[in-house]
Length: 128
Image (cartoon, rainbow, N blue to C red):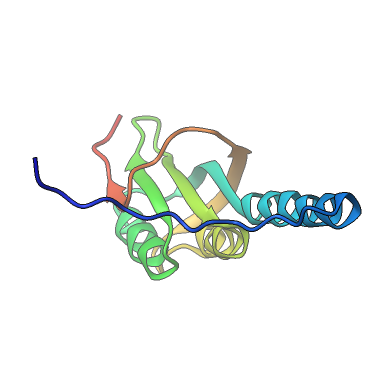
């Protein structure tokens, strides 16, 4: 059987109990802050947002910002999207959604946090 093993870094945790406690506390805080910096939201955009290249605009902007997720037209005339990535990029994308492409007339952008799993890229989904 051939193959390679991936080596994982070894953490050297201090043996001294007070130093060890501070070290572990710092590890927990840095782990929590990095996960707090990412978010995933479900967005529903209302107005004149179909037939004006809104989905294309959304996909291009999301890809520029390095976001994962998807966008699709809804049969009720809205556009729905899920954006996942670092908080700053998601917030920037939400501002771009409020403006939309030149021909769009956005009347509302409804945003809700979600835990919906997203793929590794940003994709255009078919109308639902």
